Length: 138
Image 1 (cartoon, one colour):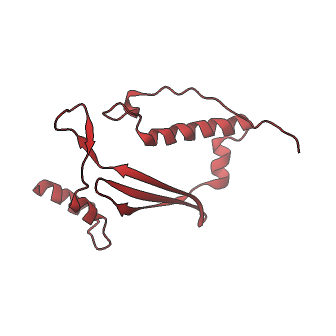
Image 2: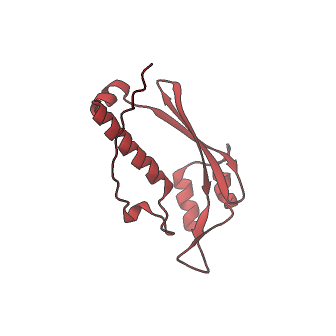
Image 3: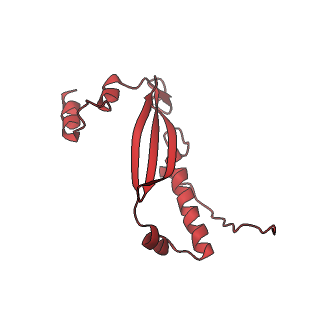
């Protein structure tokens, strides 16, 4: 078996102002967008265009659900299906954060509001109109 180097592509990415949160940290979903752009560039370098990939693989279905509520964070599971076959599964932990009352230039974690957790319960009302009317009453 020969030791052949894998095809590698390098791409310079300029981090934009909008890529960062109030604490000037790159918002983590932007990394996924960077990786997607770099993967597209790598496939293009190998001779497979995005158009050719879409013709072949077309659409996917992604299921997302919160699997655990913690004091000031929650776990989300994403499952991506291609033609009913599980192709990707991702878990993430997100923090419930607000602007600090002591320093408006900082953010801090806060307990997840009970009403937010209740909106995700199996018997909760998931109607966006209901959510809008609740916001007006508060």
